[in-house]
Length: 106
Length: 122
Image (cartoon, rainbow over all chains, first blue to last red; front, side, top):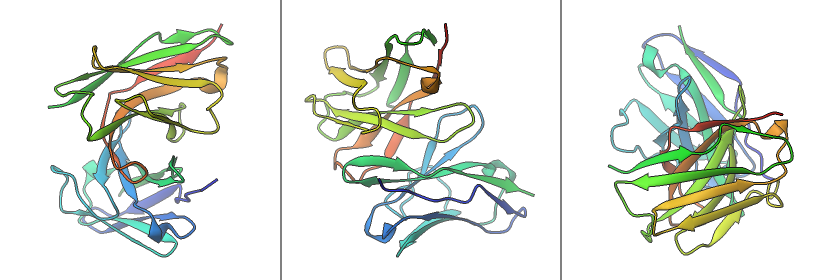
C-alpha cells in the first residue's frame, strides 16, 4: 500500500517561514492536498491539488510537489498557524493520509 | 453555505455495529459534482480514510476495513450513513464526514463535519 511520510514535528520562529514535507514514491505524479487541524477541531483544507488555496486561506500558505516530496510552506508564520498538518493523496482509488506534522511557532 | 453534521451513538459495545449518519444542509447530496466520505481519527493519532459514496450509490472502501464497512446514501433525506460491524476498542475514534469533488481519485475533502466521538466499550 502507498505510504506518505511526514516529520513528526516542525518548529518555526514567529514571522519566519515553515516548511512541512510529505514524502511518497513518485508523489510528484499525484495530486497532493494539505489539511490544518487545531486541537479539538475538524481538519480544514488549506491547499488542494499541490498548490491551490481554497477561498479564505491566506496567501501565506503555499504548496509544491515534485519527485518524491511535496512541501507545504507557511510564510510569515503566526501563532495561529500552530496546528497539526496532514498531507493526503489518492492511490489506486484509495485515500491515503500522511501521519501528520505538529507545527510549533516559537 | 453547505454544512455537514454527524450523528449517532457515542458508545458502542464490542462486537456490535457502529452506525453513524451525516446530514447535509445548505446543498443537495444528489449533486453530480461531489462524493461524500467518512474519515476517522483515533485519540491522539492521525486521520484514516474509511470510504466514500456517490449519490448514485457507487462506493469505494479502505481495504483494511472493507469487510466490515457499509456506506449508504438516502437522497430523500439528504443523508449518507456509515455502518461498521464487529467493532473493537481499536475502532474508538472521532468519526468525520466530509465532501470531496467528483473527479474520483484526485480531489480533496473540502468541507468537513465537526466530528463525533465514538467509544467502543462494554
